[in-house]
Length: 353
Image 1 (cartoon, rainbow, N blue to C red):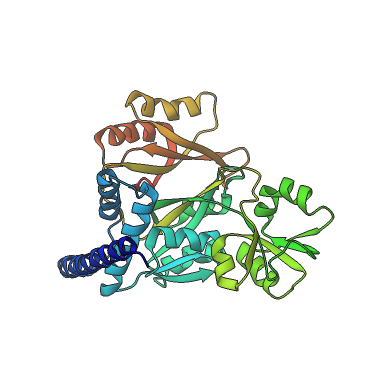
Image 2 (image 1 turned 135 degrees about the vertical axis):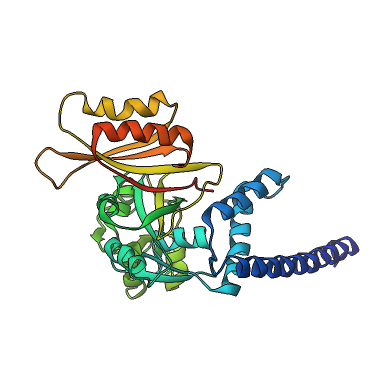
C-alpha cells in the first residue's frame, strides 16, 4: 500500500470518527426535542425544511439527491430512538410502494405491507400504522383512481408526497437472459416495458400478477421465469438483475401520497390538495377555476372523477401551489365555496424533497 493511499485512509478514518461523534450529538438533541413535543415524533414540515437547508448549503461533490437520502436516514434513526414509526404501504415486500415508504421515512421505520390500497387507508384509520403511503399517479399511466376515490370520504389527511423514479429491471435466479419462458409482473409494469419485451424476449409469455413484489417471489421459485420489478424486489427475493432500466419511457415517475391523521403546518414550499364538486351546468368549471387565477394561485393538477351522486356528475381533484393557511388561498376558497356544492381540503403538505 502506498504511503499516499495510507495517509488518505487515515484522514477518512479521522473524519468518520468525527461524523459518528456529531451524529450521536444530534441524536441526543433530537431526543431532548422529542421530550418537549409530548410524544410527537414526526413533523413533516420540519423534516422538509432540514433537507432543503442541507441541499442549499451543499457545496458538493455529493448530489442534492444524495444529501436528501443521507439526512432522511439520519432523521429516521433519530426518530427511532423515541419510537419507530410504522408505515403501511401497498405490499407485498419489494414493491415500489415500499421503496417510496423507505425513501420518505428511512430504513428505521417499520413497514406494514397491505394487500390493497383500501387496507393501507384502513391500517392508518384504525391506528395500526402511524402513516400510510399510497400511489396516486404515474407519469405514463395516469391517475390511480382507487386512491382518489378513497380520499373523498377518508378522515385521513395528506401530509406529504414522494416522487419515485420508477426503474424497471428484469430479475431472475440465473444471471442470464437464456432460458426464460415466462415473465411475471404487474399489468402497469408490463405495459411500461412492452417495447423492450417485444425486442428482447419475443414469444415469451407475459403474465399479469397482483404486484411486482409477488412477481419477484414467483420468479424466485421458478428458474425458467423472470420478473419485472425494482431493485428492492431483487434484494428481498435474492434475484439477479439481468437487464436494467428496461422501461420504454426513461423518465417514468410515480407520485405517492403520505397519509396521516394530523394536519401539517406550512414548511415554506407547500402544496394543497382539494376535492370539489360543482353543479352540472355550462360555465361551472370556469367559475370554479377563476378564483384561483384571480388570487394568483398556480394549479399543478386538475383531475376529474365521476361522482357517485348521479349520472354525468363529477368531482374535481385540484392541487394548488401553496399552503391552505396562506391568505391568498383562504380568499380563493371562500369564493370557490360559493360556486361549489362540495369542497374538502385533502391536505396541505411540503413539496417532495
